[in-house]
Length: 184
Image 1 (cartoon, rainbow, N blue to C red):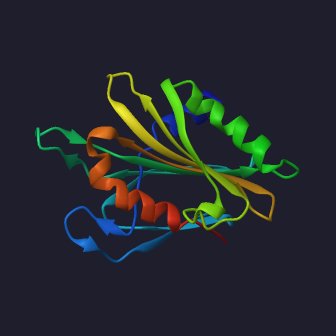
Image 2: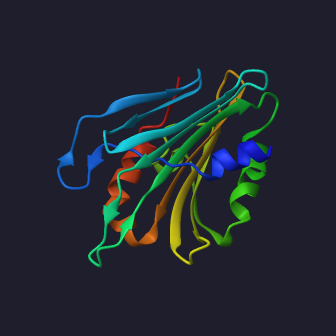
């Protein structure tokens, strides 16, 4: 469990259909197991992949190239996607249990709950949250968290963690990334 928490908390990723400077760019598909896929750009670099075949768990982590602020500070957004068995669990139970990881963050607060009826999520049996927290260095972060259950019985967790000083710069990327989420 400690290994999972370490890998999951070190998640470095985030990708999307927009480049910071150039507008729309070509995307490449990213797939995890037989459960979820989404679109990424070359601005994201895979930092780790973890698989436990015995437990049926896969975790994919990416880190976005650093974004520099006007104050010449550099920040890195991260993204992670996890799939795991969730057969027999309803989406509400799965999501609430999965949120426990985030709720331990300092000043964690859910700002908005989203579903496929909002138009941002394209997956019917999923729920998402726009949230915020403050990291150990005192930097505020905005995070999008998406939980879902695939018809094959696998659950998935997808999140993008973006330091607030560069959130405005990356907001379109984040939105495009979340919109690209699809079950396989």
